[in-house]
Image (cartoon, rainbow, N blue to C red; front, side):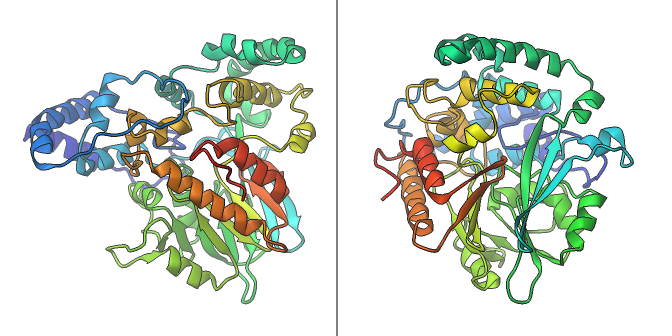
Length: 460
């Protein structure tokens, strides 16, 4: 009883939404901030329920993925205990540790009157589509937590990266690790003035017909960007393309109380913990018990002006791509630019700290030579799809125990790629992590990232 009461207090300890408090930076359900009370409660509850689970539930043994992707990172004991909890305990506990919390940016650190803005705005399609690139800082505590869960930092992977890097880039990569160390030692103020640690894009889309705007992958709603958006129209829809990109969804919903929210059920559950109103449409469910709209309802509300494509089987992010004005937008499906894009960003020759970090990220996490799988994919995405790992239970959505979620995801991607390759359907693809390419390049990039899912090509 005491354990249950302690767990209940932890689950419901929810502070109100705040624009100025930065409690934690979290982009996904992988982040765990579990104090002793929570861990103790979870341990006691696990021990007390294991007998009932074995006796009353016909749980099939999870099947390992049929592809060799290497070994998952070692799992800390508290993580193993918590992921073994039944869903009615596991899901609220993990949602409570992954509540949205916006990271700091130049305005937070340098003040609103500083000459440094965290936003870069550019027009993608005249009068119809705009990109708002947002620069922000990574909380050192978040970075440390991520490294603990994923089995180490990029510095820990340095030797392996230097083994696989092409000979002509080995010296450059060695310098990159030194540049990264020097950059990490900078103060918040210096990092903010240097453009922050990371960036991602929000896309502002003018709707056909009666007008209004759709925001895809919402970012921080500071006064300057709100003013810019409102000069272009009224926000009618706020669309979250990934259940792992939720830090700014509650703040955007608060800024535009009349806009319809479209997101995954996992994103909705996390965001409601910080006071966000319930989403209007949950695109990953066929029927919602609360009477809210589903994917079908969202499509009807958009009246054909925007097409929605949900990637079934993607339990890590529940990715949602959208198509508007013959431009496709996506989150968390591809991690590198096209071959032409790599040249444009000066992947091999760029000399900024940002270039150094991206080269390190690529050769430590993305390169096909890093793991036996041989695809351009961070290995943790495989862990989330493998029902035999604890990582597969780090969020609300879990993969099918027989591993067939990979088949579902492959078929879903195959259907989407076929649709956008139809003549006259799609002219350009934009990824929120500062990537843009033509449809053929995107299809090839998806193939090189996810073509292993069912062993067959994703491009028909």
